Length: 441
Image (spheres, helix red, strand yellow):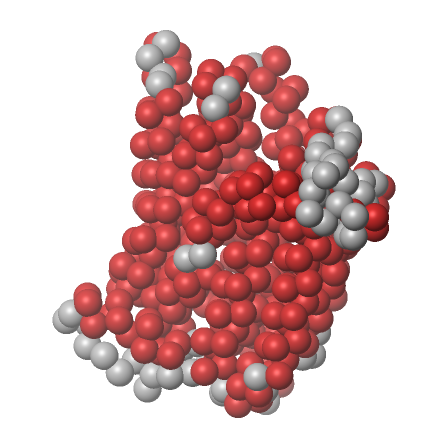
């Protein structure tokens, strides 16, 4: 028995070391991509001075992955996940090299950026489910919240470092140098993946379909989720929450700039990144809470309150505190949710299930990007103008004039977000998800 326990412990330590190495490479690559994204955003806006073209670049970077994700998820389950990540990194590195070559030769055009974003988005649709499905291959289930916390730390560093470093690097080494750094970070990621072996997937009775039909495998991801109402409820909950978050994210910059300077906006965004970093440190060092679903609903409720408070006053310190608290809870919510899926979904079908999950959760984001501007400009801002319909009522509380309509929209979105959390808690299949579904690892 002692020898068996020792072997298990050694296996756990080996798996965790392998994951840390993979995580390091992915983190370096994510930061490099963040630097390039930051620099290219500035390049596009400076040359077009068009918000529409700026938004189109974001749309091209998101929409292809959303559309192809079910197919990508099914293929990820067919293929070796490590090899899938390596191929994705190689493809993204190649597109970065092509854009850099066009930039060096003076032939770079806006439409090149759109194509590059679309190609990177397609390969990212393979990278994300492969990476997330590989985590429970390497890490024991009791350490999944900690491992997911480390992936959230990568996202926090992506938020913090590119805005801080990108501005200085643009002045010193320019866009060409930044893209060269990005290319090198892809090489780091590829080398770390080549140095790690992923354990073989142990199939279970959950794998009920034959691998002769790709369409059957794609549809199986849908069937797997629909047959488990708790998982479906969790996905719908996040789809609704992310719709609100997308509207808020688009309008935060104009809200803050309506009463203060870009420098203060930068401080608020930096505070947001610090909050996310603090949350990731907590979840990584302490592990997940015993009841993951409660942490999800509780911190989502806090997030809704923070959104509401952000619209209440034209106060940069108040918005900064709200941004910090919102960002602090974000990695805890994400890690808890991901740990639930990694525990409750059989390893051999995680690629397609995670892909369908991501597609459903992100399906409403394009709509949010489309309606956010008109809602603010044509509905809420006129209501809160000096002589607007609500100037004499709500305007007496939150103020009137430029930006106050967006503030009211934030308050509405925050209230809806809290109501969504309350309704979700009332649904027993979601509330009891961890008890009713058996762990698959």
